[in-house]
Image (tube, rainbow, N blue to C red):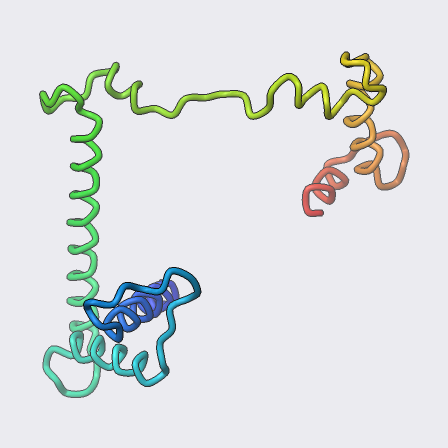
Length: 167
């Protein structure tokens, strides 16, 4: 947990340090990663430490860390509540502060086939006659079976299937 929070904090520090180093009237670069010097990075870390070290004794106690975690959690919860409320308002198209099934369904992603019939035929029609024969339909799945059947005994075991998935 601490490692994950440290990595998250480091990412936030990099982004905020890079933004702070940039003049307000200058637009960010369109391409390439933002850069931060080690000195800027260290300064930002020191500022974060100082914010948590509320009694300014140069060390962090369990109480100070717990308080900082509580503040961070409270801020994250507030941001999530705002995001949820904004999403609700977006879905509530008739603005009655209730979501009807119709409003909910309207926001649901539509499902559609990922391939056109033409693409399916193109991929399976080995003899290019515009139709898929049973032999053409079976060819690729059977070839995949043969690849997975490591000992070539005509039987796929759970271990062979797992090994194939790892590849």
